[in-house]
Amino acid sequence: MNSSWQAEIQAVFRKEWRTEMRSMSGLITAFLFSVVTVYAISFASLNVKLKPTVIAGMLWVALLFSAAASLPRTFVAEEEQGTADLLRLVARPHAVFWGKALFNIFQSLVTSFVLSFLYLGFMSATVVIPWLFTVSLVAGCLSLAGAVTLCGAIASQASNRSMLAAAIAVPMLLPLVALGVSGMRVSLGEGGASGGTSSAIGLVGYAVATLATGPYIYAAVWKS
Picture 1 (cartoon, helix red, strand yellow):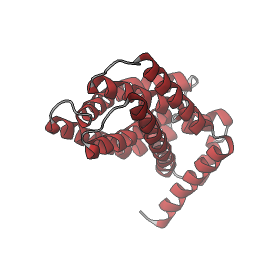
Picture 2 (picture 1 turned 90 degrees about the vertical axis):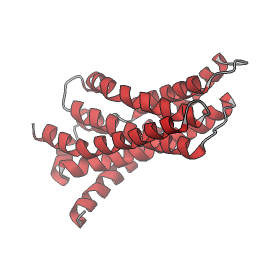
Picture 3 (picture 1 turned 135 degrees about the horizontal axis):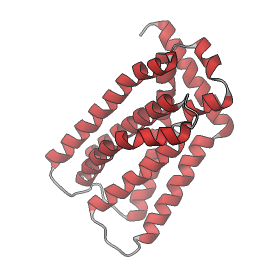
Picture 4 (picture 1 turned 60 degrees about the horizontal axis):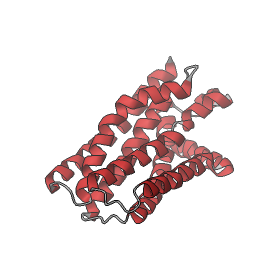
């Protein structure tokens, strides 16, 4: 990556960081959603012994909705605030996508680790295979950030941006959730290690695919 590309990506990332630090809307939304979700699930399952598959499934529901509530705003907000045209003057589309995707990845990782820590603590769940849980969580965050960023980028210039981004995200996120639940349930002690490893590899491949194709798809939308 040459210096001009790197400078543009860093500039977009810094812009997203400063915007978030001023309002804290994305982090606060994700954090509040995480706390409420963990409390509601732990209260509903009080004195009930849940299977690892159910625990993994509910954790991924929380991760999914937490990401969907905050991440697409990075692109949608540009059009709503009228700053998209200015952004087009200072950076190329690939750099814009990568800058915003990197910020979404950072935000997703912070939220997911906090949410997972609270969730496992409240549910009294034991991680049997720590490395598999960590790989599944990190790869899942990368995949979530890549997919949701791409959905927000595609829908950013539509008139009904938020609803369109949600509609586009549904078919993209279904296989991601299946892989995530499959990997995490094995890390919590249910199922064979080979199946969990395959799911983790699938999550890594999904993350690579979305982050690699996203800039080119956004560039096509940018020029339309």
